[in-house]
Each structure stands twice: as structure tokens, then as C-alpha cells.
Image 1: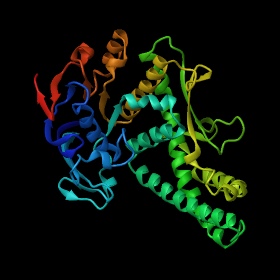
Image 2: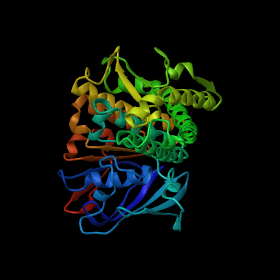
Image 3: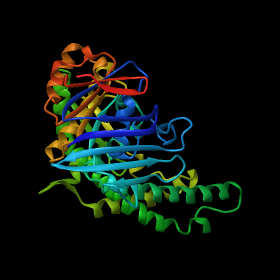
Length: 393
């Protein structure tokens, strides 16, 4: 898979820009603040319907414009797909696939698979659990696009259940009701929905972590040899004391690791029942995949709080490289994007990373100084400055 063409209208800093790419390495060179990352962000939006830099769509639209357009042509298996996205802040986005409108933008997911490593990824190691949950869910959707619907359904049910709990909590605080009164009469219905979608999402995560784990260990050793053993572990509120659910519930299947959804749904329902008094007291859902975390370890210690800056950077890079290797091992050849990566690496690590990814079908690289890019990745070069992107070699 590779991106052949990208066209942007009123996206970020670009009134309009068009870029032709080709397989192999492409290096986007220019001073900071000239729009290099915006190009990778646009492709990432096509791949995931979200930005790796901001949580809302408004910053993606150029100041003064009403909407942004992202058009791209993707070649996969000898066939070319065209994707067009219209981003309108505050309204539903619209999408076209091969010039035909689709009913929901998420129907274009899978047309482009991209693994992007950016400076923001340091938050995967040092940030809150939400950062790591998003990492897992984005990779899950890249692996199986149907999980975009599962994720959306879970978030919708969680929002409704939280609203119900919050309403009952406020009524009780105001003296208009008591826990278990009429305001909570539909809670069991929402419990069933939460257990259904939560079990599916949790099973997908557990299967993903089981499949990803050996790739993470291998990738960390490749980028930081002798730096210790990197491990990942899914931390779940449904686990019994000391239980590692990726080993206790994940079994080997003909098509990879598998988890029994019914077992997870039953566990989730039981946990919701146990937590009901505390949830009524606090007015929020306390059990479910939205409360879980991905634990990162270096040796026997958690990476968060113990890893140095260099180790944290290497671990974040290893997570992305492992994602890329996992998708490739399953027959998916994603586009690999490296946003300002080499400025943070010493010469040895630059060369090692260049060797690791030089065989990728397409690598898109941004940098401020062309000399930072290792020899193995010096392919096509584009100069980016003052709203223009010009190929120079």
C-alpha cells in the first residue's frame, strides 16, 4: 500500500496544496512551522478519522474557512482508491470513496492504513491511561476496521449510562430522590448494552495485546539493544487479584489469539452489579474498558516514572514499530510515517532505525535538517516552505 497523491484545501495552514508521492522513502524537509506535519496529519485523518495532535476538528480547518477538504489516492494490490473527506467543525463530516458518497465517514476506514510516529507519542509512556487506551483502539481499528463501530457504540452507551447516573446523583443531592428510585429504573438495560459492547471491545484489546507483545519486545531490543526487556500488559478492572487476563482468558485460535466474549460480558455484568452503590454515590460508571490501562514495563519496573527520557522515547518508538510489524505480519502493508523522529536520536540509533524500516513499501519522513535522515531512507526529497511543497530530487 502507498499514497500516490494528496490534495488539501483549507486544511491547517494550506489554502491549497497538491503532492504526488511514490513508493519508497519520501523526505519532507523544511524549517519548523512550515506545514510538514500537517501533510502527515491529513493522511492520518484519512486512516483513523482523528488527529494525533488535537481532539477536535476545528483546528484542522484553516482560519477564516468554513470547511477543509482532504483528497487522496491510495494504491493497494494494484488497484487505486480515491478518498475524499470534507471536515466541517460542529457538523457531521462527509466522505466519498471512489467519488461515491458513503452514508457514514467510518466506511472509508481501511482504505488507508498508516502507522505514524510523532513527538506526541512520548505521552504513550509518560501520559495518562487515556493515551494508551487510544493507542490500542486506533491500532485495533487499523487491524479490523469494524471495531470503529464497536468503539462508537460503547462510547454512546457509556455516555447515556453516565447521564442517567449523573441525573440520579443530582436529584439525590437536591433531596428529590434516593438511590434506586425511578431515575435509575432503566439502568439494568444500559448495563446489558454496556456489557455487550464492552466485552467486544475488551476482547479485541486483549487479543491485540497478546499478538502485539512479542513485536514490542523485539522492536525495543532493535532500537535500544542492551537496554532491557520491554513488556506490555493489559491492566483490567475485571481481573482477579494477580490475574493477567492476556494469559488466563486468551487462547490460541486458527486465526490468532481469541477471547470468549460471553465470559467477558458475564464478568462485566457482575462487576457492574458490585459497583452499583459506589456508582450511585459518585454519579459515574466505574467499571469497563474506559477505566483500563496498558502497563509498559522495562524489566521489572513500570516505564512510567522510572524510564529515562531516552528510554521513554525508545519505548514509544518500539510501540509504533511493533504496530507496523504486526500489521505487516497479518498481510497489511501500512504506510509508515516518521514525524521529526531523527532529531531526537543519536547517530547510531538513526542508522539502526533506517535499516529497520528501509524495506517498507512507503515511508514518509519529516525533518528540519536533511542530514539527520540516515542514508538508507534518503529517497525522494520535497522542500516545504511558505505554503508550498516542491519536489527537488
